[in-house]
Amino acid sequence: MSLEEQSGNGARRGRPPGTSARALELIALRLFTEQGFDETTVEQIAAAAGVSRRTFFRYFDSKAAVLWHDFDGEVDALRDAFERVPADVPLMDAIRNVVVGVNRYRAEDVPELRTRMNLIGSVPALQASAAPHYDAWERAVGDFAAARRGESTDALIPLAIGRTTLAACRAAYDQWVVRADADLTVYLEAALRSLAAGFGESATSGNSVRALR
Image (tube, rainbow, N blue to C red; front, side):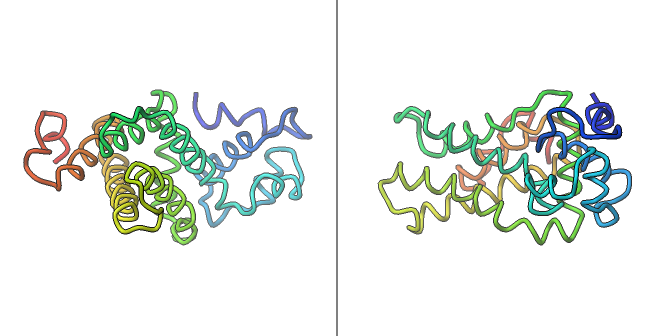
């Protein structure tokens, strides 16, 4: 289902039943795509949803926050998944499995995800708002690494694991958005396996990885 179809019911006059953060997100994505992020106002998003500006701000503190809603949900999913990892799974294998697992999308969800990632990667205002969201993602990974290693969350290696994992995943996302030639999980698998192996040749085995070069 397209963004337009999913958000179409929210575009009618009057307050739609069951207004939610998700409904506002879909409408905002449609307007951002049609008009541009900078050209779209909070008032326009609220009007298309049939709600007031005040109602919009009950869900989001800015129009930029709308595009981080799904990403912030991923941070929560990461933390939940890390809690269920068996203790005998090696640290970097556990991180790769969890990150790849929470980034499995249905085929029908991929166009929306690409739209969001393209906006985040191309709009300066969204790039400027990225730091706290990326920090939260990084901390989810670093906290898991710290617990596994029996170290504090601000120790060197847990911090390094969190930051390098985020960097590898951002590279995978960027390549996936541009090339669109394989599933996102293929890119994440390749990047995280290479990270765990120190980016040596042994990490780049298999046709799926060679295809990403």
